[in-house]
Length: 586
Image 1 (cartoon, rainbow, N blue to C red):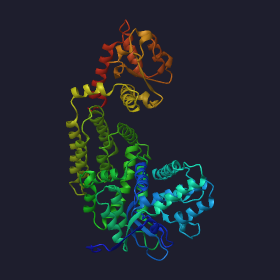
Image 2: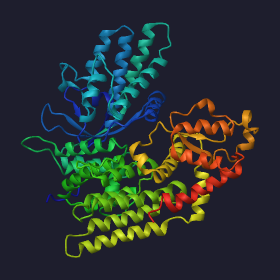
Image 3: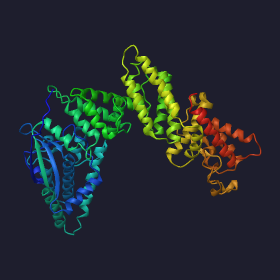
Image 4: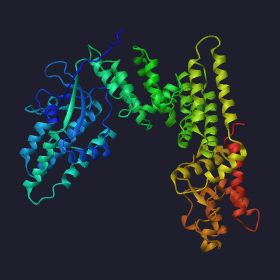
């Protein structure tokens, strides 16, 4: 094991920016463990104001690791966001100068600030080389004399493009003179000001010191996220293979990020889910300290393997896409329920589901048993979170506790008993935490009121489809209800013409779920405001069975009535059915 050093060896000098950027001996590379380019408009605006408002603008400190050999690149330990932004600024200056007809000067700007001065225009001559995920796009846009910003594939690419456009626009705002020479003088002064920016250049000579300074400079988490700090530790303990040069850490980290990007989950959030599903229940603020303290020198490789594997599992859980090569009905049902859970938008349960899916085969938990548990969680999420809006932190703590207990179950003779005991306690806890029926019914009435928001429409459709599935399961399996099925008010939202009511009269009850039905593509929207008798005829064309059943009930009690009384009674009935049946496994 490598001994811990008590000090870091470095040199620090103050200089202006031109000394950092203008030497033929200085080419830079952003190390593999660094975070993405993340500067946005707020960062740019502050930077831009400072350049133009301060006589001597202090650019901050830049931490560098000395090049390994003559001609090798200098690693940027701290300051990469600013140095990439400066490159983007110089590219904008270059292109504005060229746009104003001075191609020779534009080429000079490119040779001085984009590529190594005096170098040939090839990959190795770029002054700064970004990390792998940005490199190709940065080269063909910012570092090319014929910039191509088309087809940005990542958020990082889009930030580069947006920041280039923003800086270019800000420069152009200052070109207000009639004379071309005067406008070019404005650009020249901008270059002079950037060259004169004051910096403190800190240089370390050792890779170990470089990683330590990166961690120490950002230990407060103000500039970097937990994910950035953890990435530093992972890459520090997983260097590229000496013989082949293969970078396993980079490969695995990229794979993990791609899995997470597909489900729009940030790395830090995911790492916390992995950690509280397997090791310790901690807040985001304490996550880095917990992971670092519990991971040995050799444990970082295993952590990376575990994170990559869990990113695949979380992806399958959140997309409802658990592989089903044998077309098992139980897995099909699981995926359908997982998609419903994801649609609700409450993610705490994934902490528990990660642990169970990770250990399912080892602990002999069948797909049928997994389906039943997911069904229970789906029901609980609907009652507890979606309708009653109860606090999420309480259940997350419970899920984490059970997830860690399941992860800790060994392979001894008593392991199955301990595992089954944990599963039973999950069912008991969910049952005991369920809101009361009275509380649910009251919240149901307000939470299911119709609005034009997509989220509310999806919730109402989810409830009414669930009713259709209960009453007519065979028909729904044969012809699933999809996005072509819409929601219709029986009593119209604009009832003046045929119902002898005003919008104000019906406002308290027209949007209750008791007044809403599902309609298919056969519904004639011109019949939306018809009187009840004609509306019933139009609604019958939609082939939604539960809608037809309700219309039959209305017709069985002449004269035809659909008033506040009937709407509120149906709302109450739907609430009771939801609690007692639709979202209950009893």
